[in-house]
Length: 163
Image (cartoon, rainbow, N blue to C red; front, side, top):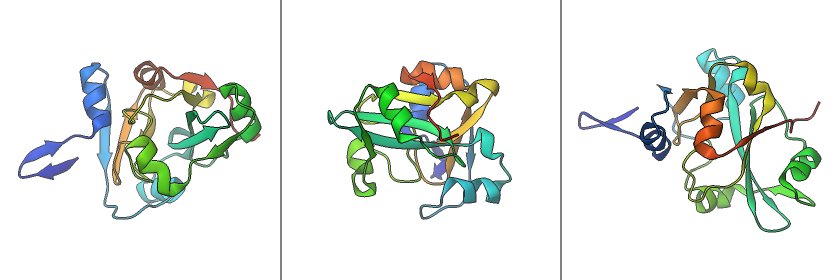
């Protein structure tokens, strides 16, 4: 956790988890620029299957959707659109991530975005007691139970990866 003059600086995501009395752990690491999730997992010795990335997409309706999938997997755009009830979806452009979510690329977490968008968590997460997601800033991770993630985001489990 970032420490400023002896005081812990929590991210918006952590404050929301605290407010909802949801147990979580944090891990911090040195990171000044965006690094992809697989490289971070390799650097930290973390399992790809429990480490998740947050993808933000926009539908034809101009509604935003958040998909949380394992870092080594690829989002199946057709499945994602179907589950979101959209004709098609496209990734939000990197330059728009902060404007849409309040977070920056590499620090984007499904918890505490500017607005609460529909969240879909890949169903493989169900088999784990704890998964790893971004903590809301570069160099910060949150470990939490996938059911708790869905509880705090109002999300759903979904099969949305390419098989």
